[in-house]
Length: 305
Picture (cartoon, rainbow, N blue to C red):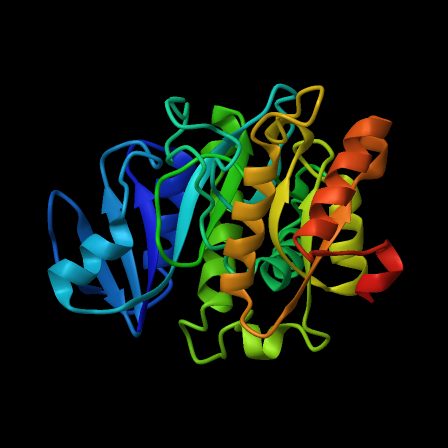
């Protein structure tokens, strides 16, 4: 089983951390295929391509076909953009489960699809905050989660790790070093043990499925950080398309995200957490009724600790 770390030369916030990661250890040349180069260190494969980070679909399946190696998970290094331009280091799951057939995803993926989320995201977020503090990036940089969004299409547990939010930040060597250190320590590439393997990561086996809120899901993140609880998909309010009378794609978005989260956390207890202040009364009622119909447990903050 191998882990793919994916970078692109078209993005300094991707290429910078990849370059810093390569400088940290004894990497050897790996397989090149379809214009993609690779380096090898233990069970980690660092892939580099020359397209936009969301443009190379099915890299995990294509790697398996090219090498015969089974992919365990996939981690993408990328830039983050925000209207505020605030410096940030972010982690998030991917997918566009709210889009319907015929929609054109603006940033990759396929309509209705939610990737299997990486179980590592909670412990990596905690480690990311620690590393950022040790490199004096805090409080200048915000360390945050983002809601589920964009592609590319993947078939194994996936997460994005990003540097935001301007070209000056994307080129910051200290930020790149922090992301490289996160990957190095998080995957145990040196002599350490990998951080975030599901069997050892969350002792209480409770997993948060976030429903509602803004793009940076602050109410969900408060619970995650306070209790160290693992999380799967985080569906912001804009990804729950609800129409009067109950129509829209919101039911599919919740179900697809729940199923993908369940697949990621074998033996875990998936509990939905609603950002209740982000919904109108009829929306909250409809969501709760649907979750009950699907036998998806709903939890208050105290239920996750």
